[in-house]
Image 1: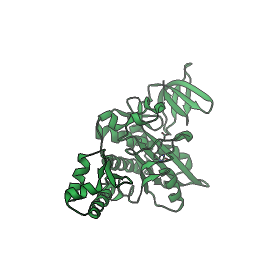
Image 2 (image 1 turned 30 degrees about the horizontal axis):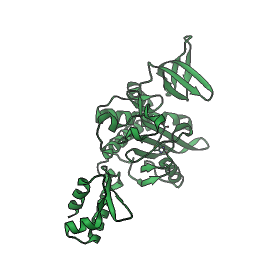
Image 3 (image 1 turned 90 degrees about the vertical axis):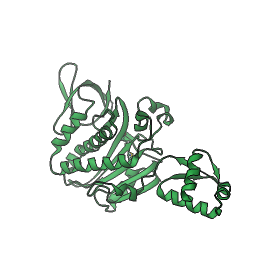
Image 4 (image 1 turned 45 degrees about the horizontal axis):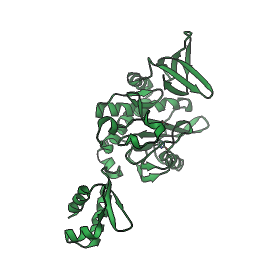
Length: 321
Ligand code: BTN
């Protein structure tokens, strides 16, 4: 009978169904319909109920419910503890709070949507339903000076996942934006807290535009942003995307902890869309233009300027020109 309720929702997808009408059509009490709706919601369907007893299937997507996510998660510590939200201000903010309270390494915070998603350099990160918005709490045993190296891991893991799973031309713009062709599909925001000369915790936030309809994004983002759905012309399983991403992330993070950052850089170079491109780096008010010729062993970008001199860039906003 629950399937009959689901079928009715699918038949009328996008349109409201009256609960009383459905109950009499299926010859069951109205309370039973409510019961089935709750059970479908628990399974991960997003159902919207209006005030006048009508309901509809909001989106043809399954929620990233922790028990389902853990089901085929091939990791040993990343994602063992998952904090899940239908909506939250920012998963990074929750991550920092949990980290301060002692949450273990590998704890994940994941949300279906964020009301105040944070991007780099104080920008807003638009985070509607359909994306993969998550943060990972890390406690690496390394000096704070090495923390920027960690930011490469999430970019490499995301680009690798999108390339392998969907056969898309995903690559990385220095230091860790993931692009498909030349449009951004994923961003990474790493926040760090130090205690004297050790790292207390790191929260790495990853936002992947998975099943996002790019036309619904603010106009200023539409030309420079893409989503996996837009590229493939169909929805993908965000569950598989997140599971594979976390698996790849853990493998790379283990390498980092073994002191093998060079292996991560090797993969980064293979996926790089920046090396060989003309770029413009914005550092505060300074703008530096040149050809990106490589990254050094610490992940700094090496630019060859017009006059042939080399310049090492440790941080800054990079634009391909
Ligand atoms: C960027 O500007 O490119 C970084 C974007 C990072 C967005 C992610 S979404 C999950 C996590 N929570 C946030 O508020 N931001 C990060």
